[in-house]
Length: 225
Ligand code: ADP
Ligand code: ADP
Image (cartoon, rainbow, N blue to C red; front, side, top):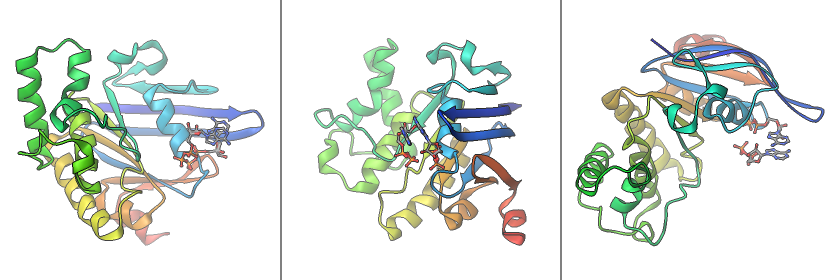
């Protein structure tokens, strides 16, 4: 089915037109990237998909329902940012399970699901550590496990690899793609790095000044850059 449909989407801040008319459909299970230079409107689109910002015009539908009519827990969308925002005083397991705790999931089930999510990102055995005892790449994977544990329909990733050095970044690109294939969740990935988008995506939307210039597979985008 259709995970996300954007229709005539616009967002202005004063005289700045951050998003200037975007139409886009993203299918269930796609690894979809939004590629474009800084200031081209990618993050603002992502924030409207998440329901953090209200469109100035147009609409965002999640599985056929207008996001502005959905309560936060109904949206079934989770966001991963570059600054992982892990709780430093909690263990890795507690960090991953925290969202389930808030939602009233019992302790035994929380632990089982947290461990399963940590296994999905290949961090089994590190659940008792604290974020400060992990490498940057490991912390990134904890943030991912925390997103996956709630089994959202859609995962929004805003430059999640931006803080990593090149080698780790390339390694995480391969891992992220593999994890997405395994869990089958729709990923919407924001990046300004063309190589990154071409490596990981099923389809890419190229943003320029608040609009989409092209949409297509990596091969289609690469052929007419
Ligand atoms: P990108 O993610 O592609 O870097 P953004 O969506 O962050 O682009 O920004 C698009 C434009 O909108 C930029 O000119 C940015 O300065 C502006 N913008 C984004 N958010 C706000 C805001 N909250 N208030 C004012 N201007 C904003
Ligand atoms: P990114 O690097 O992903 O484009 P930014 O660091 O530009 O994000 O923006 C971080 C936050 O600040 C976002 O919530 C964005 O909406 C807001 N923001 C971006 N540009 C502006 C701006 N010109 N004025 C006010 N807020 C902004």
